[in-house]
Length: 185
Image (cartoon, rainbow, N blue to C red; front, side, top):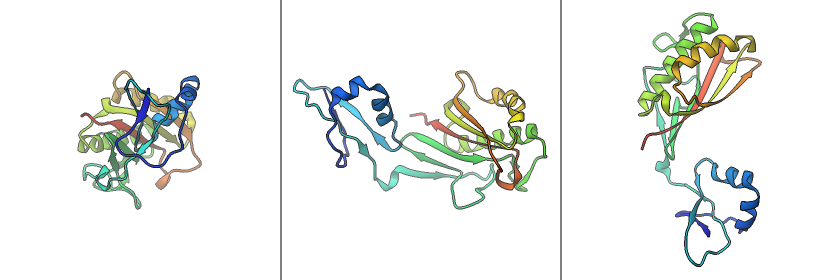
């Protein structure tokens, strides 16, 4: 069996036998953003692997919508790349006023998930496409309150998720959520 790619860069030869005995390495190699690693089945398989990285300028597309708050700095609301959508951290701001809906974590969570939904929609995705979220909380004691609201938005199977308490969030927000979604083909 051989591993090949359409576009390749110079990568040292990798013994595929090593990949078979060390699955975590193979899994880690296969999920490199912007890359593809695929197997070619041929009768005369050579023991090497190639990792490809796309350098095409059209591979990265910014997504923007007026129905969600604009980015607070030099970044995009979201980026489409390789059939994935990377949504930047979203806050519970009202798009028209750029002010928080309230000081409560519940209201901010509800508003930010509505904002995230608008970004997903502008990208041709929805909550069911989300595969990973990262939640940043100003106070981890709000975890249960956030979970109750979060569960209403993401259908089963729920996305993989990480939650952290952070020292501070932009504009003194109570919560920020970013996500990665798989775009529909």
